[in-house]
Image (cartoon, rainbow, N blue to C red; front, side, top):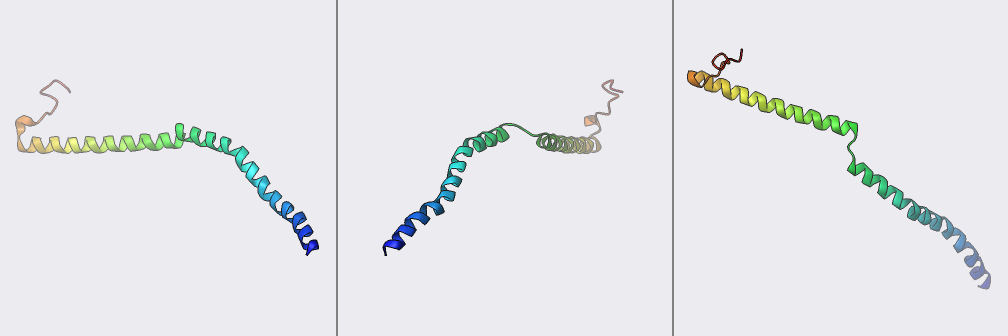
Length: 91
């Protein structure tokens, strides 16, 4: 019984040392991980900027197309509402 207790006292610290080392590394590297994640959230990558610009342009094109269709419909139904550009001097 006494031999088992001595062996257990020698083996348990060796088995736990890897776990403690991993925990220590995790604690030390946590501030770096937090800072890098914060910087990533605060900045916009070039891919994100391109994607956002493309989305903005597609929405603007869709809005322009809707406005153009509405103007054509108004022009078909009411010739006075038609703005052909010549009336305003916009050639």
